[in-house]
Image 1 (tube, rainbow, N blue to C red):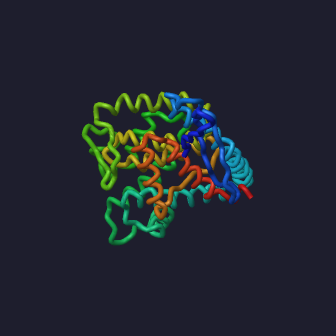
Image 2: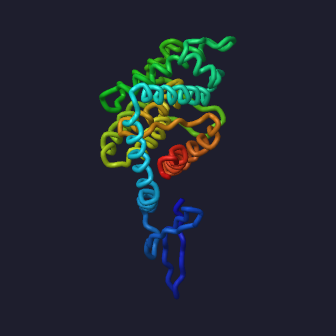
Length: 295
């Protein structure tokens, strides 16, 4: 985070923005002179200041990950490519559904999605939504157009047609909340203009912003709108990976075992209205996940 520091020189006061971070086990500090008064648009200045730091710190590494991943992926036989995607799909489906309360284990997910073996003594709803998530994942991969409301509604229908047809592909008309969360979500009357603004923002920034940052903000902004009765997290993680995949970056599986840190970063970003909290969390996780391409 960027902090405002005051320095007294003689009888005058001067203000600076400071940000410290670790790199190669060393603490580095960046600063920006603000002037003799704190500017009114300080939050905007903070965002721009941090973006420049993160661009220097992270974006070269992210681009190297893409380059090395694409080199490796393109060299694979088609069968190996299909297996790579399938393995990711199984883990991603397990983790994304488990975060939302599914009782199906990773092993059961693999047996169900790869071999068609239905797990015993598990709710049929969990089984159907696991199968539907696989279908939505592959439809997301083969989707040739860009991110749109029609695409999102289609993915939501695919996820819930088998289990919750009443809500499948439909924008909610009632209030919602998340148990244990302090985040407040928009009322129904706000959803249409917020969704319109979301896709307008995406189309404006999709060619300007780094794809990993863009994908992260797509997740954050969409889940914060929370337009559906259920499935907002799963759809947000799907469309995050749509942006990554579309731009040639390896996709990201947010693991169930890391859900606590994930939820904390998400909620803090929503409550404080500081998107960089979530961006920083996801990019750090992304760099850790694909560290093998940075060696």
